[in-house]
Length: 118
Image 1 (cartoon, helix red, strand yellow):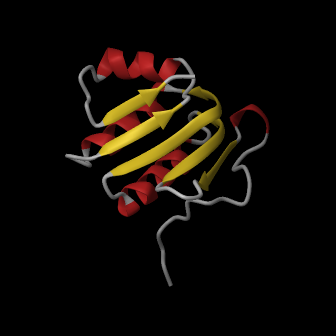
Image 2 (image 1 turned 45 degrees about the horizontal axis):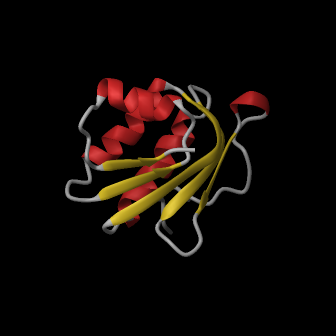
């Protein structure tokens, strides 16, 4: 029995503003998130990133167009995931505006992450 966390989730972890749904992207290595990444959903986010890192090849994708908010700790988890994948790339597609700002503020020059803006 595999104890690794599943990326594709059947539904949100919490209700309301702090809900987070994560599912695998079809046709490419990556995940899609919907909702908010905050203290209430951080564990779920970190599990999804860890599972993605285990499956990672050369490029992985994070589709965040339906994410309304990511707190600094959520961006930190993203940055640490990328840092621990040397020589590889995480493409963050359509994140909320605070993601590139926080990355630039705390991790300028982090070449392992490419942000495709909204």
